[in-house]
Length: 194
Image 1 (cartoon, rainbow, N blue to C red):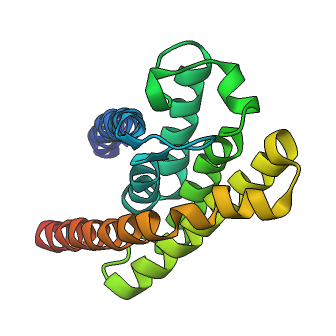
Image 2: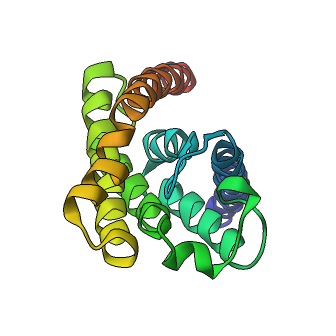
């Protein structure tokens, strides 16, 4: 009984440290998404930003749980008043406005990417998960855009989905390459430890 106690205590300490590291990664991706929101090409009613790049990476690198938590934290800090949305905006009005569907899709996309990716170190499989994530973001975003703004499917699809095709195709490929590289490095470091 006495021999097992130090191991249990050591395990508890490592778990706490791991939680701290995970928390730092969650906050890091929340901050990166906020920075990505400010890198934009102005367009009405939905600007072209770098946000989705970090949503894709959050799911692929942090996994389904932590990727989702990072995007939920991003939405939370924006709603409570920190200027993290595009154009340094904030507040609940952004959630119910034209861009709200895209924002609300971020945690869903991160979860699905994390679930499908499972830290893949294969570029092509990672690219497929990125495509699924982008499709979720723009499908939900376009649906919301149609309901609250256009009330016209052709305009919603044209200005809320198709307009982003080339821009987000590039982000998808780069995100898949970055995630694959990071996950390969992670796998090698795990193998060295074990």
